[in-house]
Length: 306
Image (tube, rainbow, N blue to C red; front, side, top):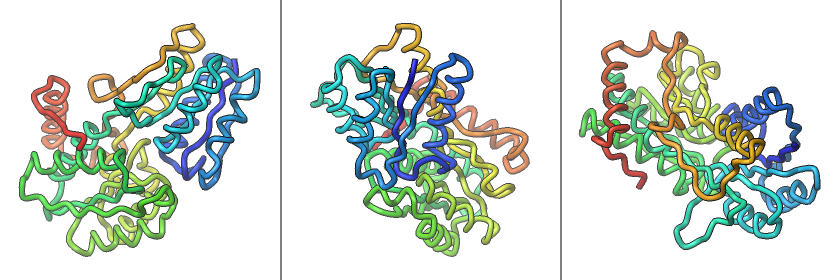
């Protein structure tokens, strides 16, 4: 079995979203003996031809597009290659568009994980001023922003959140310099913790955190190593897990098209608490965040994605 995958903007080495997807491929290769081929389309202008190139290879049976920007292209590819299977991470589900049977739309409830880190940030903050740096201003990244804001406001309705986006295009996910400028501005305005959802640009946020001796919150993967001692936590999205499980389903003949959505209940999102960062989180705060997590899973707290 051979799998193909096309990376999102920022590509391999973003220490975030794309690297998480690659981690899933490597794990599947180790556990199942599959082979894989990846394409990094650079600026992402030629995603469709990258998908088509992989789909045209007879030995490749499953093709992933990583990122919501792939939604239209991969839907078209699934229609053009009905004998192949496709998976799109962060597919933009639109009720008016029918998802082909050979395409699985993989989405996460980022707002739920972001709610938890928002609550954690507000409970930890001394200034009650927080920052959010988004990569591309889009419906997907707004889910991170809205969840973070709701979580912080749940703890303290007067908590102030500075919100900025790097760009209105995909370039916002690969501009660490601009993200650093935004973070420095937010810190200078009183924010003592900044949450980023900006891919490779997040490296700039971590740099600003270290320079200003403030805290930052990572995204997608555990980003502790990007700024040791300055990363309060990371809101993790199990992108590696969803890539791995989709390959596993394909291998076992259980692949099913349609929407697959993962939130806190499904362990698709969460936050990091381990030996690396527990010295930054008061045990009572951790306890409170875990209570909030249970309330979200039980439906007592409703988190809005908009």
